[in-house]
Amino acid sequence: MKLLVTGGAGYIGSIVGRQLVDAGHEVVVLDNLERGHRQAVGADMRLVQGDLRDPDAPRSVLAEGFAGVLHFAAFALVGESVEHPERYYRTNVVGTLNLLEAMRETGAARLVFSSTCAVYGEPDEVPIPETVETRPTNPYGASKLAVDRMISDFSRAHGLSAVSLRYFNVAGASHGLGEDHEPETHLIPNVLRAAMGVNPVVKIFGTDYPTRDGTAVRDYIHIDDLSAAHLLALDHTRAGEHQIFNLGNGSGFSVREVIAAAGEVTGIDIPTEEAPRRPGDPPMLVAAGDRIRAELGWKPEKPSVAGMVADAWKFAQAHPHGYSG
Ligand code: UDP
Image (cartoon, rainbow, N blue to C red; front, top):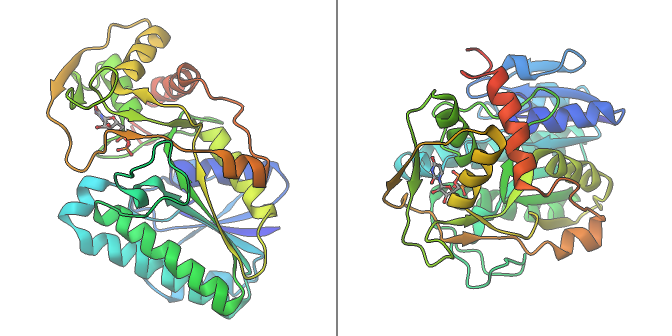
């Protein structure tokens, strides 16, 4: 299939793009390179530099004719979204509206959307099923939920075939591609920066959560397993339907457990510092993964957190200051 990958120069988009090309698809990347990296786009993909906030950007590239779109381009930092909600609504919501209208105009029928467990906020039920009430606690989650609702409405009204994957915590690296954010806010890259001495310590945000060791628990999923779910989702789209799946392994690891795993993988005693909770961080986010396993036949091949850290460690050592460093 000829596919457009928005945000294909970012961490997740670049690795899904790689898997799509390896599976025989033709990939065009649309990215504004504001937070993405030109070096992350393979030589066997075409990069179009363009911004979804400009309605002409998706319209002109989609006019070539595409079978579908995998939509990653977005802002994705909870803290930033609290301080600058307008950025999140403009880029994530308005940007996606421009994309959906361009898809409709040009007949691109399939969509796989990068949604998030942040749409659930602090749910009453953990592991979290797709049926739990959505109550986002920050503008990032609210903006992604608004997009999910928009996609449902476009599917009903205009026959769009769509799948939203609500990611839990994506980790690891693949094909020499990995996580390079500035600022870096994610746990595993920050733990590895502390291991390499790039950062002096890794802060443990919150040690008084109602969890087994007082630190927050997350469901980490390997980027290769997450990417594989996108290829399955693409094949399972159904005309006029918007299917939503949570995408995680279904098991939780605390911040301290992740740091301990990184200590074993790297052989380094990683310096830590206890710090207050980060605003907006729920105590525990773990996916109920039954629906995606049953309906898409997805199954994680790399559920080990140590394995995710080991792959991230290889990438971090090859790129201690990121792609451009
Ligand atoms: N965290 C931490 N130190 C860091 C980065 C993150 O203690 O340097 C914690 C964070 O508070 C959360 C967990 O690690 O409880 C996962 O955070 P991350 O930012 O990786 O993902 P999130 O769950 O926020 O999407």
